[in-house]
Each structure stands twice: as structure tokens, then as C-alpha cells.
Length: 61
Image 1 (cartoon, one colour):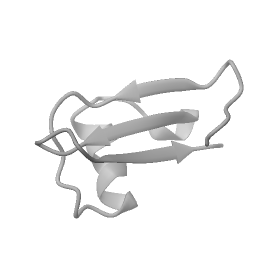
Image 2: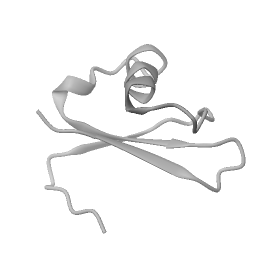
Image 3: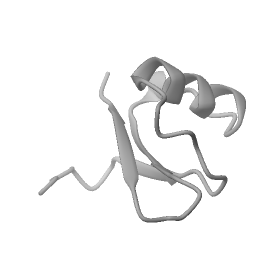
């Protein structure tokens, strides 16, 4: 279970993502596809094409 404070933003990438990507790859998707700077502190949620797996990138600065 994950617990975050109320001021943390959660961003969900609606496009399917390659689940083989490492955290650096997901960071790049957040910057390029979503046009969001992960260094501002947020939670990014990525799914695969079938929408049966999730990867969560939590950036806390």
C-alpha cells in the first residue's frame, strides 16, 4: 500500500507504455510525452497495452 500526502499530484499516462522500460525510460516518457517535469515531485502511473499491469514512478524532491 502506498500512502502520499494530500499535496502530491498523480499523473496517469493514457498511452500504453513498454513495460520493459527502466525508471530512466519512464522518466523520459514523463518529460517528452506528458510534457511534465518529474523533478517537481509527483507520482506517474504507466500501463501496458492490455491495461493489466502498472508501473509507478514516484519522484520526491
